[in-house]
Picture 1 (cartoon, rainbow, N blue to C red):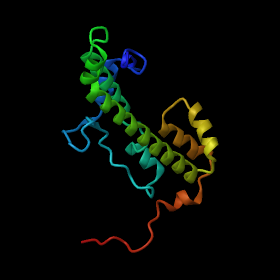
Picture 2: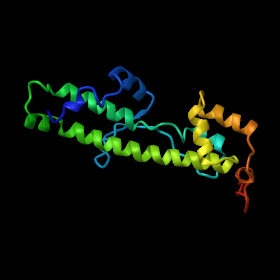
Picture 3: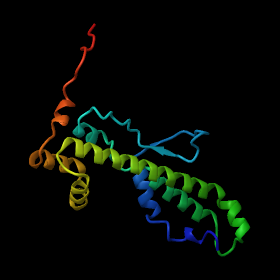
Length: 177
């Protein structure tokens, strides 16, 4: 069976868990250029010049919705086809759209996740005196959320001068009316 992976191996969450997680996100209207996406985070990332705490509170480093959307696509595909009744060509016809949606969502998830992790590494290593390996080791063992880890680092780690410069603006002041 070509599509037997839909049975259980790639589906990691139940439909209820997926729908509960997707309820946090903003639904998208249909877009013919991004047709495979159904939800968006609704968060506009802040620039690198903004302090790390503001970026964490804004949600710049939170997980993206693409993985849960991909899980929903697998659930929908599983509901559409009966693997015991349909032959291989029928499965391909029935599942083509859902499997393409799953593939594109997973590609988006891996790309977005890598970008957010790189931004997180860069932000912490430029704000605090730590190496990337130290950060990875500590954050993997940290039992709480990212904001509490930031507060811990503010208290017990050396804050680099570059982090202090982020708050001070240089140049001409903004016009006031």
